[in-house]
Structures are given as C-alpha cells and as structure tokens.
Image (tube, rainbow, N blue to C red; front, side):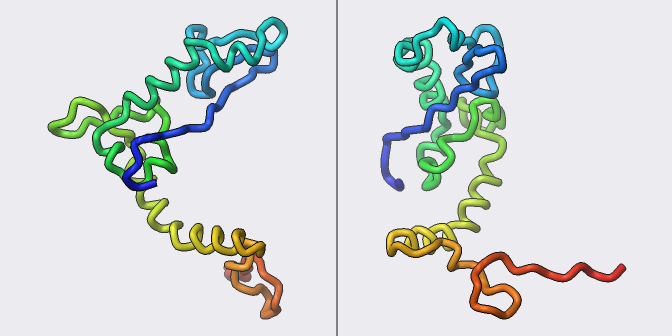
Length: 148
C-alpha cells in the first residue's frame, strides 16, 4: 500500500476466562477493561469512545519512519508497547522490532506474491513448495536427521 496515508488495523480484543473484555492482549490492566460479556452490549462496546481513542492513539503515535515505510500496511507500526527505540533527531520513538519486521517482509515478499498469484488463479498456494520424496506431491521437504 505504498503511498497511502490510510491505515486500517484489525481490532484485536481479549476476553478473559471470567468474561472481562480488554482493548488488546498487551494491555490487560484495569484502566483498559472495556466491560464484561455478561453485562456489556458488544455492539455498543465496538463503538465506544474509549475504544475509538485507543485505536486512534495507535495511529497517531507512529514515527515519521513508519509513515514513509512501504510495509506499514503489513505491520501497522507494530504494537505500541514495543515503540520505545529512540532515534536521534526524532521525537517519536520507533518500534524496536522495526528492522526485523522489514527484513522479514523483504525476505518473504517473493513467496507471498507468488502465493497470491496462485490463489487468484484458483490454485493452491502450496504449489510453491518443492515436491517431497521425489514425487509430484507438493509440500514441505523433509531432511533426514544427521547421524550423531
């Protein structure tokens, strides 16, 4: 989504065993408790001002580097809990996993693009895997254990 200013991150909620609902699995603290399944209307919860602000804060807290990154539509700046890497000359901290995310996305992009092509053609994305046991069957290749 290179060149786009709009970021849409899937909402992720956490529901505890007792029915308590939190805005995110990394923010399971009393101040982030949204309600309880037993007494909270889920439709009203989804539209709550607190939840809207929580999501907006995630977007507004992105560094200039995030806004310029070609992979923003894949990582959405990462989790706010990981945004603490200070970069010289910048006021907004960067996600400390940024370099790893970028390396991962660059490494997997060719395979992901090929799988997307196969899906669009109505074929199985497993076709990108090499045949196993010398046969025509697609799937992960198994390597024998090293003697030792």
